[in-house]
Length: 217
Image (cartoon, rainbow, N blue to C red):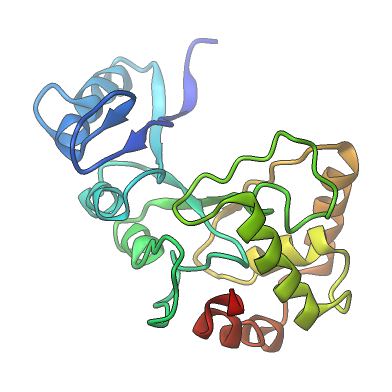
């Protein structure tokens, strides 16, 4: 390849630097990540750069507000929609508040990831490879949250996997729904979900009481 169209960093972003962690200063400051990647862009080796919004929320928001990146991989699903909305006071999950709005303000493309919440939204079958990637999101707690979601939505909007994808499709500021799968059937379900279209607004709103009560767990 003569050029990489999108170079997406995938580092844990932390308020302070540490082992396997990068701080906003290391990313945005002199001789930092952005400067290095910009040199590669200027040389014609990279067309666009992006980052993964993984780590501490305040540090992530600093990166988004810098406007330095063309795209961002954002954690977003029915169990944690905080990247797009204000969460109620009872909410105990990691709060990515304001992240999608910051991306929109700076023209940063939003690629949502963790659509299936490590698989717990897609199926009750566990592979042993599941790994929760944000705060207060161990697999056991996520399974309870997923059950609460489908106690409300049931199968009225397709399979569990399709409902999860359609939830993400319903947000107009999301540019890409990046689906991770554990088998080909989940991939097929995701494709079928795009044909079904976004989740109706009444289905999205039906989940608000769960967030207000922190899923009753």
